[in-house]
Amino acid sequence: MLKHFSEDEFNHFDKMDKRFLEFLDDVRSLAGVAFVITSDYRTREDNQRVGGSATSAHLKGRAVDFVIRPWNGATYYGVIAAAVAVSSMPKWASHGMELKVAPTPNRHIHIAWDGWPQSSFIVG
Image (cartoon, rainbow, N blue to C red; front, top):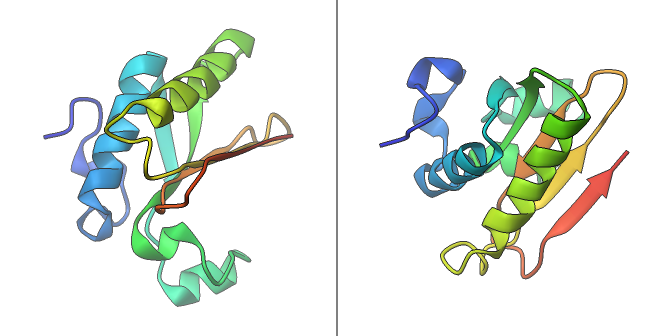
């Protein structure tokens, strides 16, 4: 059971990896700010249409893109810090996380979890 998300916040909730959703919920809990999901699971066709990678975690339901409300430096940093902290927790540390943040112009944050041996963080 998720604490911070409902099924209707996702376009394809039924296709999302349940463990990834628990991870995302933990990040949201620690960040203390609402995540507005803009992309979740993608079909191959949807992924090609948006220019996604052929190996995108979105194809497995293990990635989301979102914006935060309100957006400011403190909330932005809080999400990054929460994602790093949660990905370091023993129950998640073996999975690895990909975090990409685009501060301008759309301020989207991409978080993916796909069992990589280490986490990667891309800002900018």
